[in-house]
Length: 150
Image 1: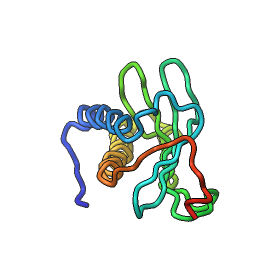
Image 2: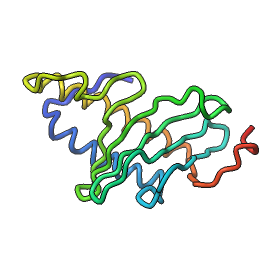
Image 3: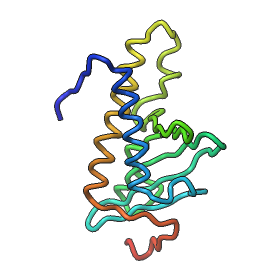
């Protein structure tokens, strides 16, 4: 994948966050009603797992990851922590399994260019990942028979 580096990252980041929100709702139609976890299945593909971390009247924080092993407690990647802003209809990546959150990495708010670049990379990755998952036609359910998956 080539590196995309838009001139106006602030505007483009907002566009990606809007797009990611819509893609998440398309991928997981019952996302806003989800209370705990759901599993996405697609023919001959690894399972997707989404877990609600926090839910408030205006935001929802979830973790989305692939499970590359039949043991659900192992190898969950990329394990993106995503905050959904329900009123603004935005989805922003807060962190992933390999990188710390923006607040942990950049303690100095004067590093706005670096902060924007960091956020851009995280959210651009989510956009591409969601596109991939949508092409694979994942179907989500809150009740999955894990024995049948083995």
